[in-house]
Image (cartoon, rainbow, N blue to C red):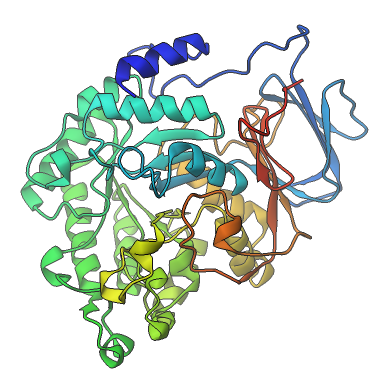
Length: 475
């Protein structure tokens, strides 16, 4: 679909295609008028707001939270959710929707369905598409396709360098001023390893108040590497990936951010040393934030015993001490948020020799359950912690309006509901994603998203995304 085609289709559907030049993010699609001229209402019956207190009712009207109380009524839809946990809709700063270019592994439609089933109301999809998202036309096409799908807000991430080649900066300004209003730039999948180019990117981004997200990997230290450098890799005959490959870039870019300003975000932190560098940077008031993936919080390189390509990921699974450090850092706020790094791959890219497998794992539909298991059910954190690391912090880092907001009257109804009594078993074939490369195949999951709302529209009902073939009228 071309840029003009996308605009024409959205005009027909009533979606805005001309954002004001001063608008930080593009306008999002509103609910279509009710066919009978009534208000759009959804009543969430008997929820526990943040998992606290007694069951209460939350009435959503025309995309906003209208009332919170007991014994509320509506002429619209009532969803009985007795005792389930109500949270703000989740926000994922780091996904790979694979469109354009690899629609055989994921599309914006299937990725959005996976997001809705995972409780997400907004995601940021990385630029390593084919062609690369390094110009306004591709960014706008991604944005408009996400709005047409209307299951979650899909924000395109622009590349830092043209073609992800690490040689020349892209036109940040043109993408930021486009209808997609790109606010994050990253070469994720590759590191911007040239310090001169990264310095220019930091200076350029500062003047525009856009976020840079760095994939920290010194490529000269990881050439041919496929597994964490340690005892397991040596015993299994796999070329090792040292911690210093990540940590050296974190340190370099933290210092450049200190000296040249701007905002820098560290993608998929994976080592104990990175945690210490982040702790140092934050003590210096350097504007540095970081994410950690669910798989780096729960899996270790012991998984590589089977040589199963599903366990290959970039950065690699580390050791138990790294996992422990990352968990504590997330609790302490040294690592700011959780991001899935949802990376779909076809079976032919995973069912092969380990060193030939493409790195990446599915994450959107299992993230909430894993974080709940680690920190709430097996730990001493509460559901407000889950809301912080999966919704509020990523929304704050990206300065994303309308998401990660408090559950209060007058706030946007971007919400998700967690059924704490719905245990389930993860199977790739049951997921909404087009690919099946989950590392949690056959694993028991302790909780499940039952309901997701995007601006008051139900996008997930009874644990399944409400797609065009299953959607009902909003009445």
